Amino acid sequence: MKVSKIFRGDRTIWVVFLLLSIISLVEVYSSIGLFAYSQSSGWPTGLFLKHLFIVVVTWVVVVFLSHVNYRFFSRFALMGFWISVVLLAVVLMMGGRWFRLPVVGQFQPSEVAKVMLVLFVARQLALRKEKTDDIGTFVSLLIYIGLVVVLVLPENFSTAALIFLSCYLMMLFGGVNRTWWWRLFLVGVVCAIGFLAVSYYKYEKTQNDVGTEMTIERQATWGHRVHSWINPQPDELSQENMARMAVARGGFFGKGPGNTVHARLMTQAHNDFIYAIIIEELGMLTGILVLVLYSFFYFRCIRLTWRCKGRFGALAVAGFGTMIYLQALANMCVAVGVLPVTGQTLPFISYGGTAYIFLGCGLGVIQSVAADVYGEKKKELPETEPQVAVEGEGMVITDDTDNEEKKV
Image (cartoon, rainbow, N blue to C red; front, side):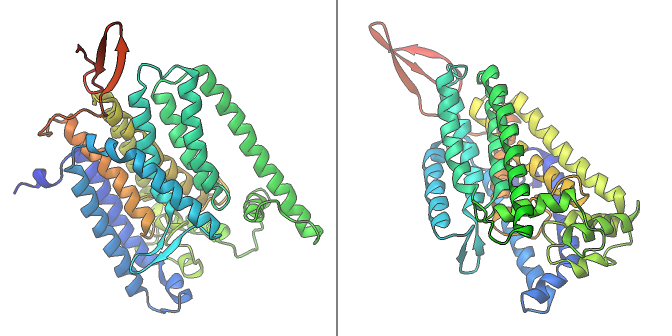
């Protein structure tokens, strides 16, 4: 069997995914030592093998999904959306961000919600393609997106912001009312800045007044992160400071694979701050290359949206491409000190888990659409169920795939 028959879709995206996976295996093995010790295992090999297993599973998932006609994903978007909402509600009532499952370990419902919400929003925009400019469409989509964001926000501000921004941009790509879109966008930016400012102010008060309490349990963490970013303490051995020192030590060409110093002192070197370790070991040159890889990946996704004839497919690619790219930018900006700590991992490079696998699901959908665009599909299917409407004395059946109307 030819390799092209196995790895269907955009070959350039496959190459980018391969390069990111190789970098991941090298850097996770190099940086996981202290985390392994803190987990009482004392030996990084076991955790590295677990990561290798996750990477292999993700590759299998991406290959499998690339062979599925992407129109099938629309059928399960509604059910998947409500399942993810239920999981988010349950884990929120349990007072955490994840379940602990056998073999898998930590299972984060927010990662499921990322994938399902993108598919759901793409489906809704495809179904309402004649009414996307209506204010009713705009409001109804906001309600669905807001439901997920509200359930994620109490435990993970950055993930909630990432989900909202990615899906909100999908709405813009889908042709919603631009006036309302920009108005709410500006309001959202002001509210987010205001919320972080209040968290920062309350955090400072808690340091001076023991009786002051936070309104939200995680608000102290967010306030501390903003405080540390605005008022850095150079002498403090914090994760942020060590990441910046790792970047400075790496220079342009780096110290070589395995020659990290700061990863030995950081419990999150393999995860949130792995980009800093990449620069320390492989240099700013490789750091720039990683940024270029993500940027080129996003460019290929946008190119796919232009070429995809189906509305659902184009919007799904735009949604997943935007989400992966924004998450990568957030992680890299944190590592070099441009943003406060967010807790976002570097897609397809950071230590694997449910986040790695479900981002792989998004990549699989992208490759499924790419296979369709490049003429590899075997069977024509409507993207969404035909919508029936009454017109005069007869009925009009609208097929969302080719937008043709047929009198019955």
